[in-house]
Image 1 (cartoon, rainbow, N blue to C red):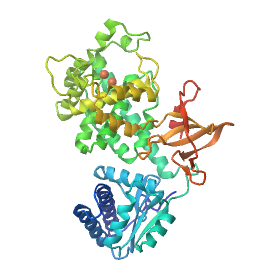
Image 2: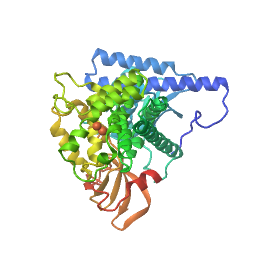
Image 3: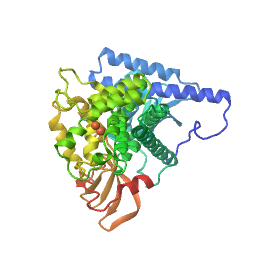
Image 4: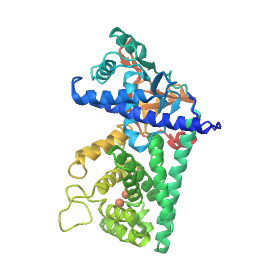
Length: 493
Ligand SMILES: [Fe+2]
Ligand SMILES: [Fe+2]
């Protein structure tokens, strides 16, 4: 589905029109955020609560700001983008969580969005908000919800029907964003390669410091635009450039996690940078050891265990000293320290591991195991990795951060292959925040074999008549075992 989008269409606009669009953009973002605050407050408090009523008043104030010629304001989710009427909203970092929350709420209600007439009254908002956040909600989809609220005398708020299922056509915007995600990812990969490769050879100050910072800003912007597109690229394996690919993957996971924690863009840039160079010390480990095909012996391990200290020192040599370099040095030094103080390098006093290091340690462990680092050879199935990590929470990892990471990657991460009870083979394309056990998938093959035209379905799709889900997951499939080349679907799509 393509929606009109004056900002992107390339049409020449007058200054007055541009101003109007900018106003609508700002209003749209404010409305979306305030709708989120209202729904969040409604889910915590009783409808009589003062705080809830205060938030509704603020929402009403925003509705009243709307320009004269708009009689209705509709907030909708179209293919993962929020719209105010026909204007696609450019969501900024501080509005990211609100947008995600609204999208998952609309999905939960099986609607595309919600429309408010400018005559909307306080009591109407109060009733609708209090109802739609209930966990035991029985009424879903736009027609049912509209009929239900109509009975209650609510005339000024309408739910907008969900669009029909994706018919397999990728829309133009999606295609562009996907391409842009890939470009950013591979640019970051090339920067790490230049920086780390260059340092390993010459051991001197690096000129790519600014390029690396720019690469991180690119990663942050792409994740804000579409987290799934960046996450699916982490699944691609690259044994020849394992350390570089691993560094970019860890940076993507760390930034995604930082966004969920509500870190500012400046903090995210430092975190992403530190994550990108957490294994900088490996530039001083002989390449033969890094690529050793056999299992490591005790001597190999003790050499490998030196990379955090090497890393901290080498970063100071390679980059000018600023907050990015300082953070990166701490993370390089601490990323193999566990939250209980164990791990390496050994430190002769107890100190809490830095938040950035805790984030990177978690993402590092997850990526190393799932992508099958050189010295453990085979990738561990994702469900086993998560079980292992949950078992090690509190000792090795920060349990709260682990929970956030699992929420991002889901139990079935983007890029994994599933066998469904329908006999279909499916590629996970997006995590479902409402139900991590039922992601969105692309059907690649059915019992008759590979499909020419693949298409996306939601495993959360429920057959009301027969009271069962249309498709269920049988189990995760190891793509190597079945000769499935995931990169074919990720890079060519
Ligand atoms: Fe490491
Ligand atoms: Fe690592």
